[in-house]
Amino acid sequence: MIVRHGQAQTGATDEASYDRLSDLGHRQAAWLGEYLRETLPPDLVIHGTLRRQRETAVALGLDGVPMEEDPRLNELNYFDMARHMADYHSLAEPVDGPTFAAFLPELLRAWHGGDMARGLETYGDFCDRITSALADAGHRDGRVMLVSSTGVIATLAGLALDLDPTRNSRLFLAVTHTSVSRFEVGPGEIFLSQYAATPHMDRADREGLRTKV
Image (cartoon, rainbow, N blue to C red):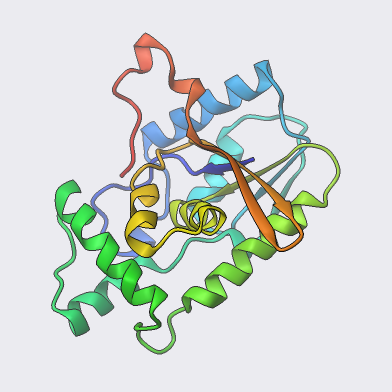
């Protein structure tokens, strides 16, 4: 099981400003934790080292469940990648949902094709680190829950479904905050069994509180 963090700081223009949960993000994580306690709570939570991932893991409120950090679950460097696209491809950073939906496939195509500034993580290296994190978690005992971010989750799904960048971008746009996805790892393969589910949000008083940005 892999969970996206709760809503972070919408409207931020750099990683440092973005990387903490909003008040709603804390509530979303608490609602997921409540749902997990009532169904099948994990035996172990592994989160990335980003603040929003760690805060989500804590806000779940799963008292007694051990937690670990794994930097391989950290998000791709979106803000620097977006600046590269502005500097070298004349694509202005998006300012709203529709412009982001048009911008994302272009960014992913450049990334998949190796056209990113020196010093930015390559697509191949990113895939290697996130698939190794998933595989290692699959060998742990009990029910393991990973807390990560959109790029990690959508890229794993894209690998499982063998999607090109344009189709993969649609999966990026579908990952709501604190949504739950499930993967299985086989010899040299990843299988997707559930994507971006939010059963903890299926209540009338939470209608309209699903968020993606």
